[in-house]
Image (cartoon, rainbow, N blue to C red; front, side, top):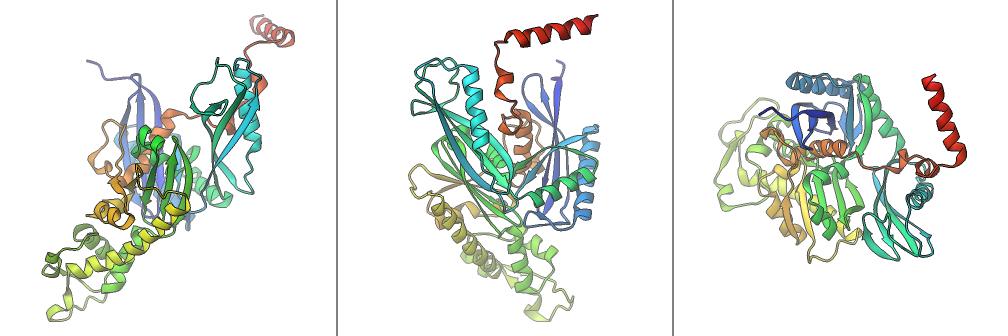
Length: 420
């Protein structure tokens, strides 16, 4: 049996504070999204989701993409890029128009969307996304396809994500400096939600908490769309720094200790288990100077997690995520790979918590199937879905199917010139 034919290539780049990762996927004729190649490099110029060193970030992007190209055996030219900086703002714009009980035509929908696009007030920011989510007919919400239905009033909810212009421009410059065209910059919470959340979860109401290296993004989904977004300038790298500072060791060793011995939940055995450390000076004192208990390590981790979860809880309450009934929290991002983090978060937040891993991709390597790569997988899914965005929408008169005499005559003259 012949393998499925690849009809479209999608390349995603996630530029984070800890790593830069790339993924090349192919959309087959069966509609499946198959992974063709991946790449990863250490992020050397990003701080808290913002570009701090353009040259080093550009080099990391170039090396990451080259690695993915070698694995896939392809050369790519355009990419989808994520942005997770703390300047992201989410809003929902609602517009309505009267129809007088007539049938909804395509021209009515186009006019409504044009009005919605004009109603967006960026307030000095850049519009990253302006996507129509659900329509309303006579106040009835959740209408997906109003075309052909009768209504007195037609409305639409438009999901808008805004960001500061300067950080976005720096991000794009780094990618273009690696000789790549940018299809679009996608807000990380939207991409991550596509990879980790089911459609039913987004409809019922769910909070997505992405524990990144430098930033923790808390986003709220209700009614199938993102309705709230808050960024906390604390991440998993802060835990690493706390460990390095508390025990006087290098960051590299602190990261290894966190990954191999770290946990978000304490146990009695932790007081008996010893961990060897090598101080920065290299001068290991005699006796217990080169060892710590695992309980001491877990204590440092939990101290930072207590601060982070308090901020997450405050963000959820600020967005109206108060009722615990039917409201779930999904943890993802690199910080969600820590042992016991789901149980800890469930206790700290008082809500049901699960770990969100990427899904919906075929042949995803095991090394890239964890929560740390959810945004990368979501970028590929976003690029494959080709969502409607009002920023690129053509004016309403151009989408009306009925042509007047003038338009008909112009098209006829164009055809005559082309043939003769």
